[in-house]
Length: 151
Picture 1 (tube, rainbow, N blue to C red):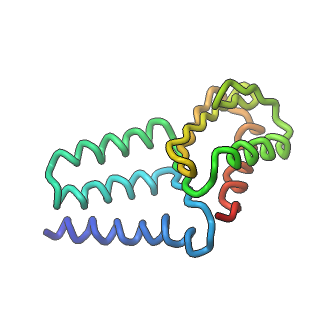
Picture 2 (cartoon, rainbow, N blue to C red):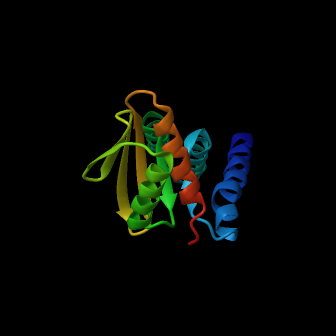
């Protein structure tokens, strides 16, 4: 029972930090990195106490997916605005880019693929092919552009 209280505490704190804080500032929700992985695993494990042990597998699968693919979950920005922001970031960093369908290859070192699930919910997968300072700069600028879009 003590574990349930700890999981509830972690889930509530991370929900306030990751979801309610951006919404209160009328910003999009951007879920990235280890913090998001811990949040999703804690959320699914909390739900597991009420639904059954099979949902542990879902939590671990979602956590592994986010860790291995280094995916970003973006809620509140349309796909068109994501592409516009990425184009602006590429121009700001003066990077070379090759576009292949829904993916961009920046400086032959970073592949960004945008998958849209619903109208304003997107999953972005970043894959490093090689290290490039311009590609890292373009990704950082793009992240800031996304965070500063108003809903």
